[in-house]
Image 1 (tube, rainbow, N blue to C red):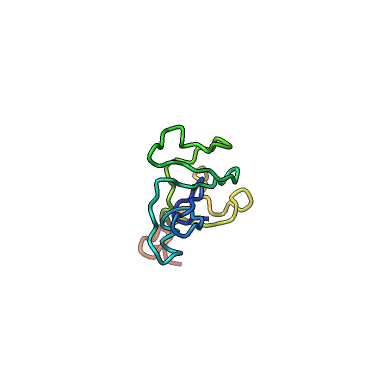
Image 2: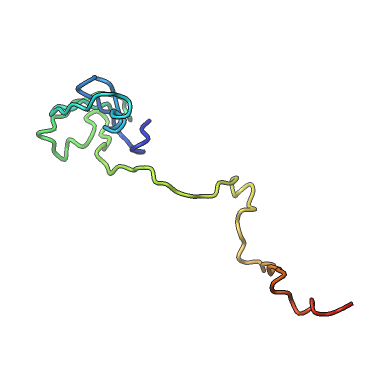
Length: 122
């Protein structure tokens, strides 16, 4: 599973070490040599798990699909983005994290803005 491209549709066999990687960054992290460039690329489709070759010099629009299952593997890559979010239980089970705007919210009480009844003695 590639941590650089979240929606990788094919694995690519590197021509230098003949190992399978999801992207060039995965190869750079796991191997101590640089990726050798080649005009003939070998892919393994992640949908049908079949291997096929493509010539990079004559790569056309019809070559963007797996020849066995027609899976479109040349798509825009989804890369992980840093995000800050609140994790909670399923809201259908525990909805304490949701704020209901339809009900009247209690006024926040503070010592800096007391209500008019705080001035009364006794």
